Length: 311
Length: 311
Image (cartoon, rainbow over all chains, first blue to last red; front, side, top):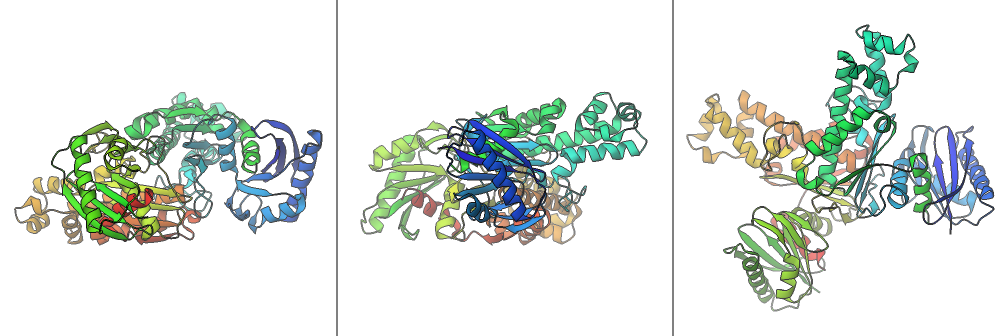
């Protein structure tokens, strides 16, 4: 029987009806206007109703929710959801009461990895690592066909491993995290710092007085054009990412490594450095038989994965 | 019903009869004289027979083997066992034929972690990381109550994550591995290099012309006495270990972190740095609720774990 998948973001809720094989039957999107738990539950219910209606009123049984944050997998309690400002919200129970069927709540990256595992680039794999480098840096781990959640539901925080102990301050409040150097937001921030320093003619020419035009690709372009400051930021970020991903391959020995997120998809230089890094730095035994590929479901991976987790 | 646990080393085979709760009923030890697969199977069979006889001829059903190396968990084939010089030995099948009951073969650190999980310091935990720093550096990962083996059976190679890309040569043939700086063998090797350089009076006084007396604790003592060269080697090793273990806590979010191995047990300074490092460098969310403790079964953890895996 089809199930519902929910992608709960800070701005929008997406709901989709997904069949047992992971094919998306219908979807609907609703803006999050009221961020209280009650308001969000109502928005989810509306989007869900809309998706079910679009699917011709098909009967669904079960609902999976993927949400950014720290989630207690058994209880469905969201311990912390930074983009909604939530702490200890029993979303699973609330939504179950509202919708009338079982609800599972998981981390958004875990949901996306589960979608890729069953309906995307991970099909057939039992041991998989998904590395995402977008605005932030994260990962999801599948071991023996099961999601690795960790005792507190926050396994896979690749962005918060320390690459420079005591180094650059990260959005999480700690120092020296991988994300502080290599996440998209921080690549842009570092590029703006370089621009503001007045030490980069190349960057000035690329940006033309509009720092809001800066993307991680602007940095890559400036580095490719030989800008020393851009090269330094860029090489450091790419190098840290390469070693970090390689080290996780060494630790987890995945049969498949999936790459996802805007920075890895749209900055070919960083992507190449990560691919080369895995070859150069992962232990020989851990990369025997390793297949590296792109995540293939794009924005639908999380919604499909959440639905399949509830099936 | 009791099962047999086998600890297969390069020099000795230990066999034990273990009850379903992980209590050791009897054990026997035999030297490995003939390192051919056939010879080792015979030695195992002898030790097993001896252990069963010592247990009063109790009936056993099933046998688990823990062996250093790369092991394919489903087939029981040992792909590589460096200390026996083996490649692609179907030990599980061979031993099953010889003993007449089911045999499981696993990596020695995985067996030890399984023993600690069910009969030692890991009781009650579902998500656990065991970090071993002895002659070498290794780890074993338990997620959701299951061993994380990896696609090729080599997950947990903590010693071979890269801490200095292109750095000190490791016994594995690669460069810059954690083990090359912080494993006991390499701590001793680095201490001997320092001694040979003639730049350490303190070390000379501690060693008294007998470099064979050097242990990792000699290095720690020299560092504590203020020897600059010893301090450098020691601080570097402790720092790399601290960040590496902390980063794995961030990635895996274990509820329990077990420390084991001679270096962590007998060098209080290194141990303290690792404990402090987890507090300082693991992400805040990943270390909420984390319990750090010592492995408690000592040399019996592997044999007990192997037996329990076969139960």
